[in-house]
Image (tube, rainbow, N blue to C red):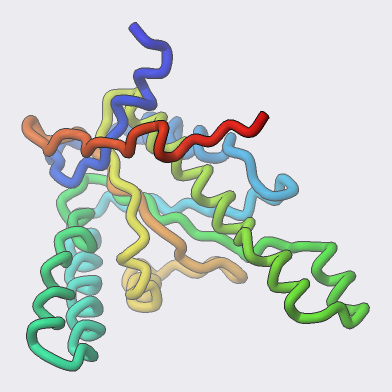
Length: 212
């Protein structure tokens, strides 16, 4: 057995059994997320666990309507249909027994504040911000959670698309964490018996460069 199988076996699961996930498993998965690296160890995350089926289904309907509303901004029916053709990628969480909402607060960059107060040119400040360090920390936490789920025998799916309805979602779940905003979510549960195979990766030689 390859000790890295929990990485190579991970795939996005969008079809789930309705078997409940024990709270201790959810806690272990979220705990794994908190062991991810974060910029200057600010740990700028907060996790909200949803298990109420009615709320999860209502959230799916909210996202569907938001996606449709945005699609109606398209100039013609053809583009609207293309926009709506990916709706399942935005709403597949509605079939999961658990949805973990991932919130983040802004990354506090001390050096940015110092340079800004010294009237450093805007383009220099933009370069400092360009790595989007706060978002990278959230991504690292979520990857830890996905890998933990795989290692524990569960399926998961990392989703950012539904956040276009973040305001309506926050109203639905009646949750507000001052200074934080919804960044993404993770659908979690036992994978259905037949789910699509893991899609192929680009050849390593296409994405890897050694410089001597």
